[in-house]
Image (cartoon, rainbow, N blue to C red; front, side):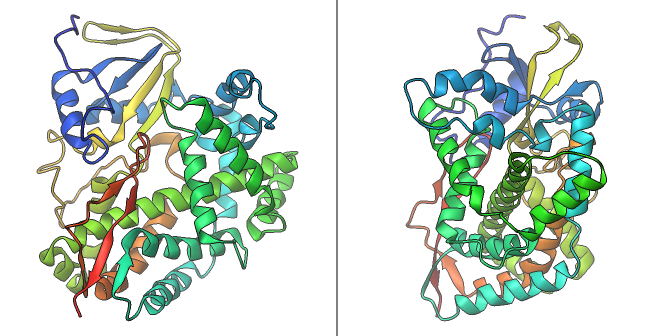
Length: 398
């Protein structure tokens, strides 16, 4: 295939971070499977991405092993303690086979929380009370505060620490998974991994993980327990904050959506929430590795190639989703891929749905009294794998 005349994926295309979907649409339509980086291919169409995610013929790329290979270079001529590989060793989305099954089972049991729905309603009311009467609100900070309270509940700690530090800790861990990451960023991630080791000491979640691991005769070390706890914080905080802030930003731009959220019943709200997950796609990409050679038309992909799967593009594929760039409140069925699929389906999907089902109405009821300050440009983080709003200024209508 002659790809010289076809578009090639480039996340540094002007305007990509503000709106990646125009570029992804062109890639999906003109060059839906093509080679990027070294020994890597990228997929954009829903059917291709869905098929790979659903199949047991593919493995995940093991992040900890990648860091083991990179650490001698990353920390060359540096006194920093290389903790990247240890800190990411037990992240289940980068584990395969039995190790993945065991870790996922332990985490799944540890995330079964009683009374969470009631707590989520209380947290939403608390956030609104804390912001009552304020003339100016940063939407992202507002959402982050809510997710922070949820995290304290999930992790079983009474005081997680300063919110701003937790935000930085979570975001730096998320950046460790990105592409085109310079050595200085990895060194910063390493520093934050070392900084966070005391957060989870004696936490309810870590105790639960150890309990269920012991029941399964898994000899988790302190580093293993920390790795699982760190991943849980990052995954629960980063994607939930990003999804909630993107969803509310979208809703607040439309009086029709505001009114719909406030009047809809629970079933209608659940359908809308799935649409908001599809629309926001906070995790934009995931990676698989093919154990066997692949043939797509005249494209040959050798075995053990990294396959970059663009979830964001798949979720906007107009051959699957009518008017994909619009939020359709009654889109049903909605087979979006925001939580992945197959054996690596997101462990926190149920909690993410619970959060939205319990917070969306009270938050929209409160925030309808504010408007987005359109004269202030929305700030998007310069990240590729995670789509993150840095700030959205709101101004009171009263």
